[in-house]
Length: 96
Image (cartoon, rainbow, N blue to C red; front, side, top):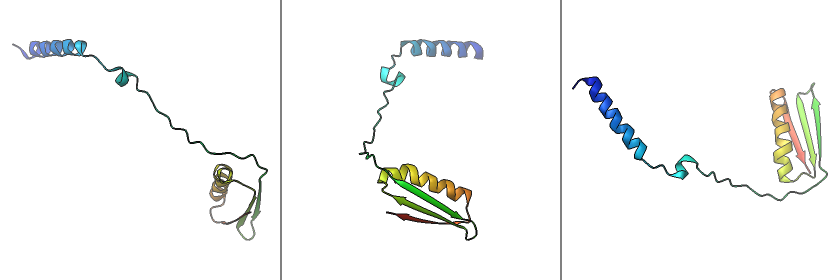
């Protein structure tokens, strides 16, 4: 047998085996389980004050009445933006 005819027969055998295989539906369409973190939310009237003093290279943040979720979702991204804008400035913060 030549190499080509041997390869053809082996491919034919593989083709028949693949056709007879049954695939599990979970392998074809996996079910993704999503876990949602529930956190209590409070509607509050918070304030953020930001003061940039360019002469002294200081950024002052003052926050009032922020719950931990608001600090994480609102204050920290704003602080990160200011740190990227003014990398050489010192950032001070006060939370009440």
